[in-house]
Image (tube, rainbow, N blue to C red):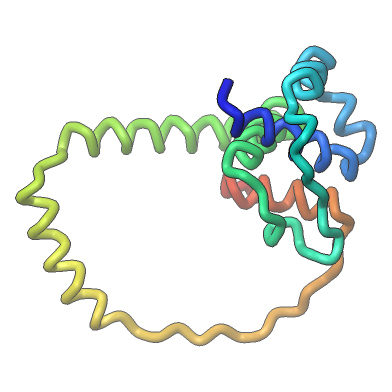
Length: 150
C-alpha cells in the first residue's frame, strides 16, 4: 500500500468520529481494524468544524473510501442500485473513449469547442437560503451528491 492510503485511513477514522455510532457500527469490524492498523500514526489531520464538509481538505483517496463506505453500508437499496448503475455507465464511457481515441479527431474537436465556448451565455446565480445541518448530515449529503442521488 502506498503512503497515500495510510494517510487516507487516518483521515477516514478522524471523520468517523463525527458520525453517529449507528452508522459507524454498520461498517465491518475487520475494515475498521484495517484502517486502525494501517493508518499513518505520524500524520496529523483534524476536522475544522467551522468549515463545511465540502470545504475540508481531504485526499482523493479519503473521498473514495468514504464513497465506498456510503455505497456498501449506508445507502438504501435504491440508492445503492443507482450508484452501481452510474458506475457501470461511467465504465462503459471509459471503454468507448478508449476505442474511439483518434489524435487527429481530438485536435479538430478542440478547435470547434473553442469557437462554441465564445457563444455561451452568462448564467445568473441568485442567492439561496442556506440551512445549517449537523456535520454528519453534511457528509452524507456530500456523498449523495457525489453519486447524484436524490
